[in-house]
View 1: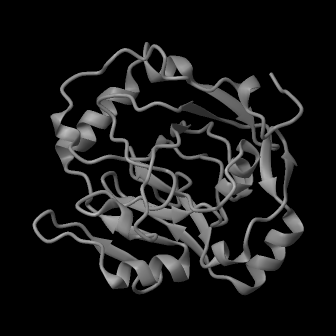
View 2: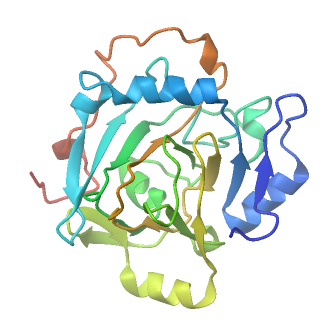
Length: 266
């Protein structure tokens, strides 16, 4: 179970970014908001990401160091009808006040991605900080955040996200190659695990987790018979998007483009 006070419930009629949300985010490095997307919005996201000739065709995979692979499709320019808001500076919250959670400055879209852990085969993601990658992409300040949106229900059985509560306060940790992934220094992670709470973030499709770019997080291999796909980022006014636009020019990342892994892998 999540620590008391770590989660909130979305109500379109009353939603606002409250002082309690800001305090929780600053203390824990994340907040969980239940029921942020309606079932109609969830269905629209699934339809957009499941087609073989669209986002699926742009996917690549990496070895997790334990002979399993997870697929990812990553793009830098928003793709309709997917929800895009921000994975970056300074706040990820959607409506009605996107900039409030992390200070009120202007925000912009950094990138979006679909993370795919397929049933019985999906690989783990090692302990890491997102800023451990983004720092090498020229992002000077860690005023960045991710929005984690389950396409499928995420439970411990099918490898839900795991976080170290409050680990964003450690600052950026050095990262190194683990398999074909970039992971936080294992010695630092081990020390952090001794003093910080290890939280399994179980979520349903339609929930959203907003987390700081320096929050340590991981997920296990998916050895269950349940798929676990997650879309990272979001936007408001999703239901106003009526069809998928062309993916041309959206700059989907290929494995060899990722400068965070210095030794190229194939």
